[in-house]
Image (tube, rainbow, N blue to C red; front, side, top):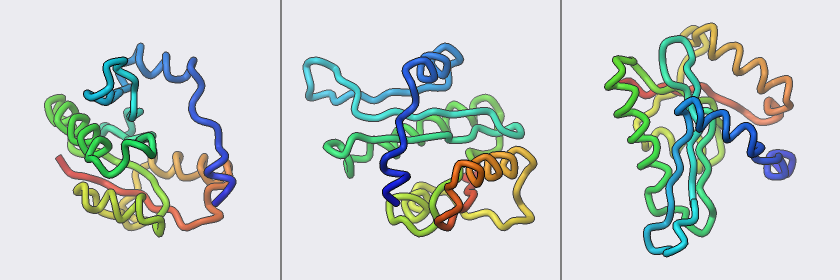
Length: 142
């Protein structure tokens, strides 16, 4: 999966757009007096739910619950807006992808459960070459 690992992160312009739209959350290390970010989450509205576009945690801050805290924060906000679920797409067999999200309360969706927006996301991912490895759509009911 070297091609995925080498993929560029979102540009500053993209991150600014997400921030301006209220769809970017950032976590900083409370022990760092410089308040440097160690994780972020990007979200999109998809079919009346909130879609987790990306969660990224710096490797030096991994396994401390920061990604899960960002997801839980997003879930509370989506529930307060009356949305029924969080959704995401991820690699099915990578331990820190689908198995991790299952531990965070997501379930794998069967193909018949995919909404039009999720099918469109999967099509874009396939066009980007991500279907070289098994992918899955997931949902966390709120």
